Length: 132
Length: 149
Image (cartoon, rainbow over all chains, first blue to last red; front, top):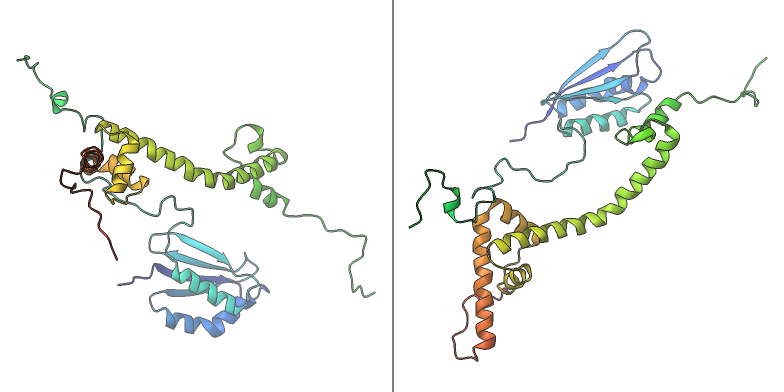
């Protein structure tokens, strides 16, 4: 069963700043629809008073990663697209994956070591066997 | 006085030079010498590093294949077979395993690799019998070809 990895979305913006206009329009129009379409994501809208830092959309995931995306001077539709993109992501770091596979048990028959294909007399430790 | 356009003799000064420089230097941080600190030297080194990394993608494939071949050769010599004999007899027995998988088997599944070497050895003997035995012996078992349609 699918478990959405996005825990909460925090919309931090100032109600008077000019570049937060898209954020305010998003809150008025599209935030409720977005919240209804994604019932397992909690949407927090926290307006901060006075001139503060740029408006930001903060996404927190189940594995603890916090991702902040600037929404300054973005339209409401762009913020909706950004929010859906964050909702469909998992919280893993966005770096180059070295290998597309991973196993915890790579070897079933026992990994090769220099004594695998040698006669087993070499691995015996004990009192010296007398040659017969 | 209403000023509708900025005066033409006023030129704006660059304010985010620091971040433009950091964009380049962040790729040079693990270099040796002054080219990990000084922008002028770093620009050249970073550009060459990127060019080399794009060109190396083709060579990586060649390098890895050579590595797999070395490993398969070492593993098959442990079982008494040389690499050309091993690979050619595996192909003749319709075992379509590529070198990457064979190398991984040789490392992590030594018993499977031993059985593959035994299979190649048996097919080799059957090939010798078919070539030198003048048609009186029965056909080899592992020399039979399965047709998939």
